Length: 156
Image (cartoon, rainbow, N blue to C red; front, side):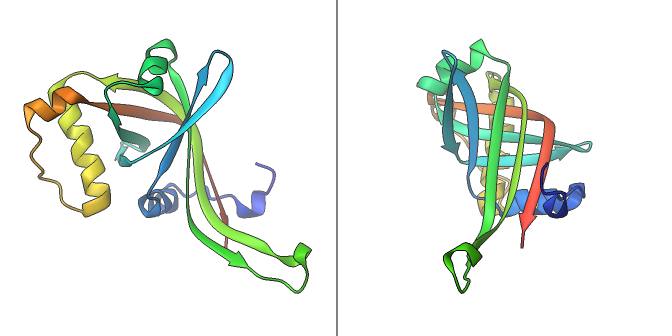
């Protein structure tokens, strides 16, 4: 990271920032070209490793791409604020962001899909006991990204 003075290395602080984000973008490769898509997400800390879950339609470009690649990049950001200055060059933008990469997969087992959906709903609602009808589970996809590389930056 170029700006070491903005780097966040404390894992608990990183999790606080993740908790404050409302959208996560995943980056995939399609025929040698980048493809980025914003998604609703949930997360968990699994023994000191971040795991992300995403809700998706069961069909589409990302669903076609994921089985052909095992790694995906991700980025999420929050706490956006313009910092005005006296001149254009003195303006700045304040933010917090978390980025990294990890192994991505489409979950097939209904119990794993429900687990991921519970994490997603908990992230947005703080409720953890939602019901998911089997017919709905058949129509959607749940993705899991196990993070293997993580960085975090804050410009406050």
